[in-house]
Length: 456
Ligand code: UD1
Ligand code: CA
Image (tube, rainbow, N blue to C red; front, side):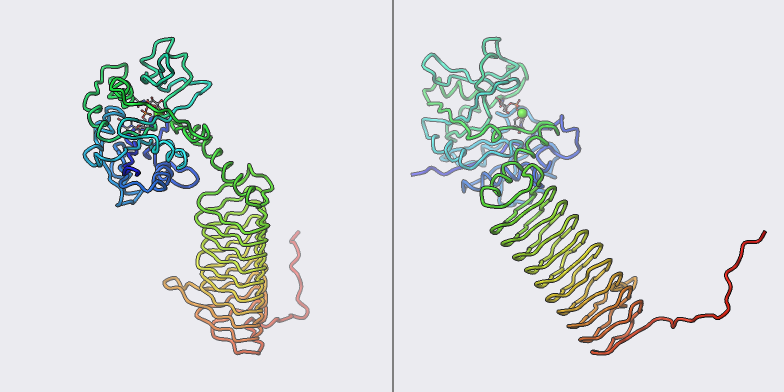
C-alpha cells in the first residue's frame, strides 16, 4: 500500500542574481512561471497536498499562480532550507511521505519523483543525487566505507577532501513526515552561513539507522536550478530542445529543431511541417498536412488539415479552415474563423470576423466585426469602418459578393449576395443583392487645361 504523499515546494529565496523586481520563481520558462512547471510535475503524482513556502515578493506569488487548492505558507525571515520546511510542517499529514522540491528547479520529471517517493518509507528516506564534473557550490554527499550515505556537507563548510567529492545533493528528497518533524526540531544554525540547513537531517537519519537511499535523475537538466538569467536562458534552450525532439519523434518536420519556441501546448497531426523561427503560444493545434512558414507567431490557434500559413504571419485566437492559405504578412486577430479554402493575403488584418468557404481577401485589407459569406472576393485596400469613435458596428457581406479595390464599408452595413461594389466606393448604406453599386465622384476631364510652368 502506498502512503499518502505531501509535497513541499521551497520558493522563498530572494533570487538576488536575477537582478529583478519579479520574484525568481515567477520568471517564465517556455512562457510559464518556473514554479508552475514544478507544480505541474507535483500534480502528476496526485499528492494529498502541495504546500508552497514563499517569502520574497510577498503575496504576488500566490496571486499570480492563482491556485487556491495549494497550501501557501509564508516564511519570513528566511533562515535556511530547514527552517523553510519547518514552516510547512503544521500543514502536513504526519503519516505521509513528504517530497521536497525547489521552486527554481523547473524541469524535474514526474517519473524521477515517482521513483524517489516509492523508495521512502518509515525507516528510509530517499535522496536525489547526481555526480557533476564541476560540483562547485553544491552540498557534497559524504559516504561511509560501505558506500552508504552518511551526511551532506555544504560547499562553504566542506574540507578540501570533501570538496573533491563529485556526487552532490540536488536538494530534492522524500522523507517520512513523522521523522522529519523530529529532525527539523533539532537543527542548529551553527555553520558557515548561519542557516538552518535541511541537509543536516541526513546525518541525523544515518545516526538513527534510518536508511538513506540515493536515487538519480534520468538526465542532468532535470535537476538544474535557475539562479541567474544566463541559467534561465540555458534551461529554456534545453527545454525547447526536448520539446522539439518529441515533435520530431512524433513525425513532425522541423526545418531546424533549434529554431522553434513552444510556450504552451502544440498538438500536431501527421505530416505537419514547421519552418524556422516560429513561436507557438497557448494552445495551438495543427491538423494533418499543415505547413507553417518561417517567422510566424501562432497563439491559441486551430489550423485545420492542409492549411498553409505563409511566412511572417501573426495569428491569435483564431480558427483556420482546411486547405486555407494565410499570409505572407497576415495578421489574424481573436474571434476570427476562416472556413475551408479561404485565401488571406499580405498585409491583411482580420479581427472578430467569420469568413466563408473559398472567400478571398488577398491584399492590404482590414476586416473587423464582419460576417463574410462564401465565394466572396474583397479587393486590395478595402476596409470595414467598424468603429464610429464610440461604438463598434457589424458588416455583413453575403455569398458571392465582389468588393472592388479601395472601398470603405461604413458599418453597420450589408452587402447583398452577388452584389458588386465599384472600386473606390464609400458604402454607408446597404447595397442590394446582384447589382452594381458605385459610390465615388465622377471623373471630370477639363479640356485645354495647362500645367503650370516654372517662373523664370
Ligand atoms: C541547497 C542545498 C545544497 C544543494 C543545493 C542544490 C541546503 C542547506 N543546501 O543549497 O545541498 O546542493 O541546494 O541546488 O539545503 N529557500 C527557501 N527558504 C530559505 C532558503 C532557501 O525557501 O530560507 C529555497 C530557495 O528559494 C531555493 C531552495 O530553497 O528554491 C534552495 O535554496 P538555496 O539558497 O538556493 O540553497 P543552496 O545554497 O543552493
Ligand atoms: Ca541554489
